[in-house]
Length: 352
Image (cartoon, rainbow, N blue to C red):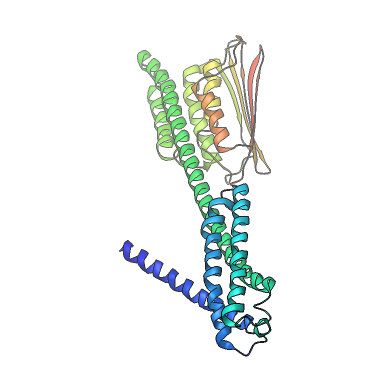
């Protein structure tokens, strides 16, 4: 099937070439026939010029342009163009002698005025060659543009796939880290046979429901994410009891705002994991402030500086995810001193 299509395509191209050169022959016959009453001589002279014109044109469009001009081998293009020009000028001179000797019987006065003028003859031949070469250049540029566009599309698709794979990998790291911390807390309560264990299991069930059915979505409502954080905080409150003092403010955030899931939780996790109990309390302040399609998130916990800034799988991942999902759309600041550790994050949303 493909072979037949290829054959039909080549036949179609061949017919177009034949039709074009027939049109050029008519043009030569009309042009060189101006001022002459001998149609037969004009037709014979035009036929004599056709092989010269065809050869010159095909040399340009199938050799000089694709092999040297398009490939930017300009020196060779100019050199071989000069050779081609010299040879074509020589053949034009031969055509004029042909007209003088064969058609006019060595009678210069019987020659058609145009056929005896080398400038007019060369202009007519080079005009055809120039027009065909211009179309060839347009075609090659169009093909090159399509190839470039296709290549760019493939590159973008590859980058997008890599980005999606990296995001999935980061999420896979977040889930075990989060579950490990929570299950470890539940294990401690189970050993003590604490009354709060069933409540913790229920809270964990809600969190797992969120992880299984929401976290794979590209965006989730900000309110759902905040509720998810509140469930996590409830689990931690059961663990810390009276040693935890936590404040969460989210009054100014709209339900229409959407963000990537699991974006703020690693910061919250790290506050519990690395925060220090001072004066009998682990103090954590969390605030969400939303305005003008932007989210201002801050979290601050009591802290004792140990020489290294808090880190961990969650915090490292969130930095990578922010760069992938909100590049040039976020501002992250981390402040640490002997008394507190604070994270300030500003997100500029485009999907609101």
